[in-house]
Every structure is written in C-alpha cells, then in structure tokens.
Length: 442
Ligand code: GDP
Ligand code: MG
Image (cartoon, rainbow, N blue to C red; front, side):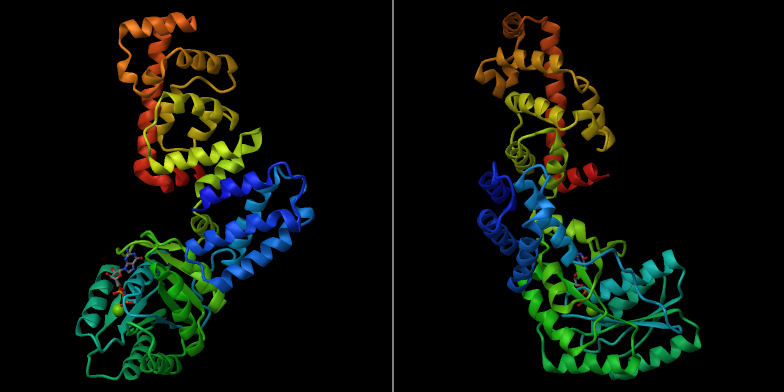
C-alpha cells in the first residue's frame, strides 16, 4: 500500500535539497506501483507520472517542507487534476424535456441510478420527471424501474417486452412533451459483456431521442476492466458524462482515473449505496486520496508543518488503520507527537463530539511541563505495566508516583486519560480511517 511505500519514498528523499530527475526516479517508481495496486490502468498511470515528473522538477517544490512531502503533494494534485475539475452537474440547457440516456453493462447500476437521479431532480431541483425502461430482455427489469420510480416519487411510463426499444423511447419522448415533463430518463438494457447487438441498440436509441446527457454508468469494482468497457461505449456513443457506482464498497478507485482517461468525460456522480439516497457529487480530490490510499497520511503531513517526523506520521496512520492495541507506550508517543502537530485540541475539535470530550481531558496544548510529567510517570513503569495497565494496583501506583516524583492522584489521572484515549482509538479503528478523515476534514 502507498502508505508504506511513501514511508520509503520519503526516506529516500530525505536530506536532498531539491528534487531532480535523478532523485525522484525511485520515488516515482514506487508511486507507479502503488497506482497499479489501486487498479489504475497503465496508460493513465503513464500520463500521470509524466505530469508529476514535469511539475516536480524545478521551481514548484523549492521552499516546501521537504522534497518528499513536496513530491507527494504534486502526485495528489496531478491525480486530482486528471480526474476532473469542480463538480459538473447535469446539463439541462435545452428545450424541455431534457432527455438523459443511461448506458452501461448489466449490473452496473443503471436502473438504480435512474431512481437516484430522478429523486434528486425532483427533490432538489423541483423538476417534473418521467422515467421509462427500454430493457425488454429481462421481464423483471421493467418492474424494477416501476418500483424505483415509485420510491423516487416520479412518473413511470409503462412499457412491455413485446415492444421494440426504439419505439418505447420515441413514445416516451412524445409523452413527455405532451405532458410537459422537464426531464425524461431513459433506462436501457445492458449485457454482461460488450457485444455488437447491444452497442447497435444503444446507438439507435441515442439517434432516436437525441439526449442532452448520455451517461455511462460503470461499476467502480470493475477496476482495470472498466477501461475496455469505457472504450467500447465511448466509441459507440457520444458520452457526456460518467456515473461511477458502488463506491461504498471497497473498490480502490482506480476505475475513476481509467474511465476518465479513456473517455475524457467528467465523472458527474458517484453511487454510494443501494438506496436512492446513495448518490453524491463526484469529488476528484477525495478520489485522489482514495486511490493513493492515503487520505489519512496526506492530511497528517499537511499538519506536519510544526516539524513532526513524517515517518512517525505514517506510523501513526498505519496504527490507526490496523486498529492494533493501543498501550501506554503509544500514549506517550501520541501526546508529544500530537502536540507538535498544533496541539491535540486543534485536531480534536474537528472531530465528532464524543472524541472532543475525551480530548478535553488531556492536558492543554503548549505545556511542555505537562508532557514531561506524563513521560516521567510512564518512564517509571515497567515494560509489562505499560503494555498491560490493568496490573497497576495501589502498591504499584505508589512505587511509580515515588519514582516520578509526583502524587498518586496524578498517576490515576494519567491512567484515566489513557483509558479515554484508548477508547477513542478503538472508535477510530472501528469506524475506519474514512470516518476519522471525514471528521478531520470537517
Ligand atoms: P443495471 O443492470 O445496470 O440496471 O443495474 P441495477 O441498477 O439493477 O443494479 C445492480 C445491482 O447493483 C443492484 O443490486 C443494485 O442495488 C446495486 N447497486 C447499484 N448502485 C449501487 C451503489 O452505488 N452501491 C451499491 N452498494 N450497490 C449498488
Ligand atoms: Mg437495469
């Protein structure tokens, strides 16, 4: 994973005064491997690496914290740029109805997405929406759209499997015109794999209804395979946008870059769940972090301006991710480390309430002495006690307090703070790094 790779990359670059063709070579090889692991297709990787190389060498990195950090920043930025700019919504600048045609393989999520778009258009843009199914091959498909339309609260125009898809679409367009619909969403049949008949049919549908939006719906879980599908559809149809589905799963996001690379079209929305509410505007920057598998590391590095060791930041992120047991050794490390990152409280106030509360229990930022005392107390513990604080009964606590030159109450307070933090860490690892990052980014 890139988190680990980057640790190595940054080590390689440490101490170098600036980025050069020579010293970023190895680092870029690591980035390339990491992108392959994230399922990004080769041609897209090539373009990205070329762009990064060009941007990284020279002016732009001078004055940055360290060459390693600068390079990672460049990779992230270029990746974001390659995936598109700000969110572009659906185009409706036409004489109503605005026709939108869905294209994609069977199971990609077309029917579900029709429901999601219909709901969004109706609720947030107050549009009068009509949906129709041209999927005459699977008897259940038309019923499925009917159900989805009811859930979305939009009008469904019945069709039957004995009709021809092109006729269904033409009739629907006629109906929509006569009933003053703002939008007509045309659901289509997909096949399990690309085939000639399907491509011919969708091209005919396109010619018949002349949609203002031709949306390619693609399953993010397809990974590298998405590239062939995208190629076939973009050759058969003038696509206007992409909808990437099933991003709520554990897809690594490489499909986004690949599909964008092949079609050159904007990714307009992301499907993030089976329910009709599971639709989000596509955010290139978030996707870049996901592809790099390092949203956590990136923002930790951003916070690192106060001189934190990058390696530590990476280790910290890794630990959070792995959800491994958090003991007093870690606690000691975290306290001094987070303080360097601008104070625990500044980090915590961006997190949900239950975390902020725990943070309030910790010594206030900027107090070197408080840290020193905590370290003193923990240093007075045996290694076994640090790993297993349950051992700390009264006699042991007295011994530790004596050793550190503090009162027993202070040892107790520290243990309480530790428990709070431990609970917090467990929450993080349960909610996943994603939850943590969403929290941090506000
Ligand atoms: P179609 O064959 O292209 O019309 O695909 P469907 O809309 O029937 O979706 C196929 C399956 O994928 C269904 O079980 C959907 O519930 C599911 N699905 C669609 N979009 C998403 C999504 O964004 N997230 C998840 N988890 N499942 C989705
Ligand atoms: Mg369908």
